[in-house]
Amino acid sequence: MQPVRMPKTSHGRTRHRIAVLVVPDTVALEVAIAQQVFGPRIYNFAKITGDVDSPYEVLLCGEHERFTVSSGIDLGVLAPLTELRNADSVLIPGIEDPFAERSDELLDALRAANEAGARMVSFCGGAFILGKAGILDRHRVTTHWILSHEFREMFPLATLESDQLFVEDGNVLTSGGIFAATDLALHVMGSDLGYAYSNDFSRLLVAAPVRPGGQAQFVKESIRVDREQPFRELTDWIREHLDEPLTLGDLAAHEHMSERNLARRFQAQTGMSPFEWITNERVNRAKILVESTDLPISQIAATVGMGSAESLRRNFSRVVGTSAAAYRRTFRADPEVERESGHLLELAS
Image (cartoon, rainbow, N blue to C red; front, side, top):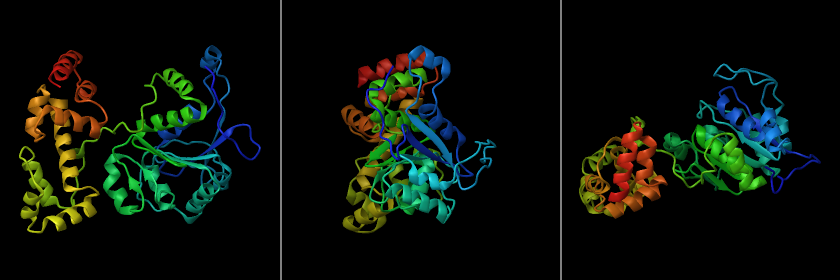
């Protein structure tokens, strides 16, 4: 188990330095993911695999020399923020309060690192800190899907792809929820050292091989409780009529406005066209039925207004990033029911 190439280094170092930003509300588990993937190798594993030395150096940095994060974990002595400017990569783990204000000193250090050419990486809500520094402007990015509405409002110059596990756009790499952080970390490792190496490393972690960033996060919009959703009355009405053949004229008549005005305002407030929203909502409804029932795909398609099994199959794969059968297998708790219903769904597809 040996890498086919090595990551770039700077400042005369022999290892690629990854500066991990720690703030008081940092999610400690995501720091641990960075340390596990990029830090020193586990000794007994290394003896067996021959992969003894990590080509990375992980340096935890913060505004203060030491503090306990909000989960109660002390991450040890932290290097000063000035070290961000000298890093080859800067990594911001997830944070518990993505809307918190951050100091000018912290944001300036991130901007300096970005201007110096560092690779800028965030896990989950850590993207909000990069966004506050202006580093995400004009980049394609992602974060945890449940924060997508707030993210779009705060950072309109970034292009949020909220359904992606992770997104790489130039020197900016961002990921979704906590376990998508592992996917992005392994993707970074694969880009640097070769994907055969990163896949072997994932086996040592007893994790799945590197999942593509385009695989969708497991979004379930009904988890959110939004008190002020845009077009709330219209979207509630659409949900009540999903099984019907809805047209733009139907939506415009409901809102008592022209089709053109409705389409423009809906796009501005939701970030997607009315029919993109309806398709996503139909897929969300289908996900619930796939997850919680044994209905065949053709019946689910009719129930959610997709018209045909083929239409649902195509849109489900596009939106969710996996087939309906695979999605059902993932979320069914009873292995016997899972195998039987998955087989029936494949036949019906």
